[in-house]
Length: 227
Image (cartoon, rainbow, N blue to C red; front, side):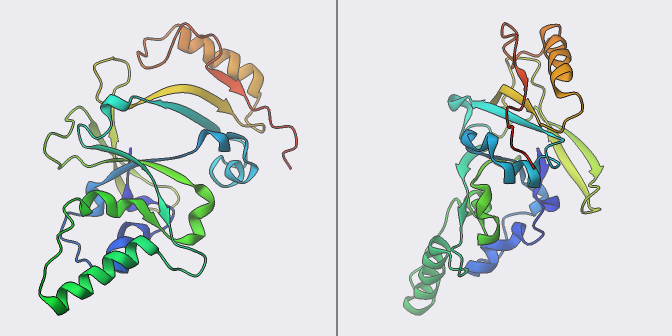
């Protein structure tokens, strides 16, 4: 899971705080880790492959959700809310108005889970993603301690950032996602041969969160009209 510091939109880590005027006193963005996903129906979306699949030379991973592990151990899974095309963000505007009313009336509103939900708002320009986000906050009480921390230099942003790595080779993992399918893009090198080889690798591996009884976990993309 990647730190929010090296997202493709540099303003994302402060977007909700800035729009609402809420001071960021709930820790640094570098302490928040995410996996960005979308609805499974978008696995054949050409725009998504172009923007996020290395122009169809990459892969698409489809997950099943272990619902009993969501909202536990520091994990939250929810769809992202986007502003409209005029930049108006209804939910954030409501919070902003409540804060304005608070300053006038003297009545205080406390947003107890703001440190979680502020990470589920984005600008209109990214709305094509229809993102579903898995958030991990390691500082929350009861959060999983299974993750291994590693640091890397992001080759796109040139920002030195932390990753949280969960071991999925055991059923005892706290990680709430299970690999359902891996799709190799239409421009992935030798995608049919590589799909066969990777399936063989999985069948001979010891990855508990992959159903090794299935023979076609990895498949080549069936998109035929990619330009």
